[in-house]
Image (tube, rainbow, N blue to C red; front, side):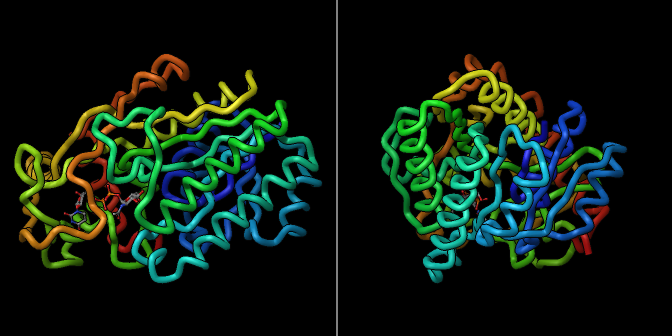
Length: 336
Ligand code: UD1
């Protein structure tokens, strides 16, 4: 029996494939390389010394996707594949709705046809919107501020409705906080194809000399130092959370959402200073206007994942900044 990983060549997907192979799961990766590189597959093999099956395919091509279900004995799906650039989703909403929503529905139809009803879904803390008070709990009302976030919220609802309609479905909705860091080997990590939108990949590109300085988006938020506070989580801890969620869905039915975070908030300036101190590099920065749609603080209540998935984070902010820098320094141009 195999586990199908959609988007397995991406940042979080690749780290999860490594953890699955370490636990001796049989892994099938499907990816269309719209935002990832083939080289990542070699790196995964190098880290684990193990092989896995791989298909280059988009979830929008039902026939191609069906071949994967025909040719393999799939037991569960971990579904990462999706577009994720917030700004682009505002400019091209239909591109996001088509790819993320229709891709997921196509995948779920095939799961039904081939009686594969175990699903771990890559959601986001973005579904907590702008109106909730930290720490965010899974029971809070959901809302979003951009089409990317709305695709995550809609897919959660689609999976919810499916699990009501068919009691054999077993689903975990994983709401990620802010994944950063990289595998300790420095062989895999985050490799944005465009100018990075997120803080850590931008910061490491400043550190490596590809960009002149970091823009800090606002310093007058109601936070201890005025800059935005987020719950940064090491991508390897996050990947391990998927293994725990997979074990849970394989041994139960129904649907549950889980926050995957550390439960601790770190400000932009805290992260910059920790990066400088731990890695011995200077990060020039300037304070600029706040970014539209940003909230002051986002961090998780992590008690549900701890109790029900028997999972909690182990790696610290120091580990995260060290591993992010180790990856960027060893791969100044990513996988190219
Ligand atoms: C962003 C997305 C969110 C998505 C998540 C993961 C927005 C509004 N939100 O979350 O929907 O799920 O990424 O991909 O884009 N910052 C700077 N300078 C920078 C970049 C960021 O000061 O160049 C600040 C931000 O204002 C924020 C913090 O750093 O306070 C983290 O930003 P980021 O890494 O983009 O993550 P989120 O905004 O939390």
